[in-house]
Length: 448
Image 1: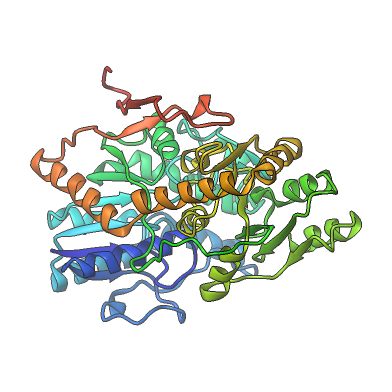
Image 2: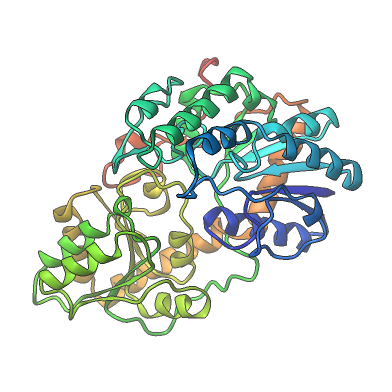
């Protein structure tokens, strides 16, 4: 098959791009041909489809006048350029299937018109909360917010949720209203959610009549699933340094930890909160146990993973399926995560790590203490459990098998996809994940 992959960034940037290039490699490795549609950028990985890429637009530019932002707004909602270039790409490449990733705003759903006109099936992979929240994060000024998930986007404007800007919030709300009014989401044939949590939220919102199925993100082709022979005593956080990631709660937990425990913390990453975090560390006597090493990737990050005792992700917002946890488990590293979003699905409490109450330094401190109370045999068993789960559930080969099962089911049923994915009632899992409690996903308009 010839498969068209669409994403607004064609270079390594975040989790969505990791997925985008992982899927491309897996498809090529299985004998499929891959073509791309994206946005022009000097950082882009070269490909022969780049003449069809849309021009670069940065909606976060600071020195943009209000009238320019309004003009940007029309492209933000519905890009005529993307529509025309997609038509030209289809005529030249004639893809059999399109897989959409991050497309809102820079590319827009205008590309659905030429795709459907040519009868090309469309799969949309949900990487964020854009279907439910104009701000894409379900965060409003640092706090979890679900006010817009029902389809009324006025709260986004009133609270200036997008970059604390009235104009940007209006444009984002306008986009969300337009997409629902035009029923563009119903032109997608199949949605894939990497977490049961997001699948559940998308189903509850009722923004589309099309099937929403669960399929966990894969790790890249060539991932080495192996535990290092030795590990250190340090905790590791790696990712963006921003308030919603909960790193301040992690530092508070360490401040209150038993001083007799020989634990440390390595913080790998950068972001707007770094000065505040470094200041808190210095003011609370944590400089000997906490070190900030900046953004790390490649071999340097792999070395940190091999040397740590555990990876901590104390998020205070709705994570979906973060690659940091998948990568840690592929190295046989237990994980300590908060009980928000898709995180409790990835860690089985007491088996592959621990789950704590989001935002609670005391709950996190107790989870860390549990880890350090394990004897060598118990810790080795937890590491083994994490590694085995990564091998079983996160491989690209397994993902591709499940991906084409969903696609074939869609083709055989003429778009009336069977709802076969199981989901977990995460709302009743504050601190653990009882695996036996699963139930079939039912659409809002269907009886169980």
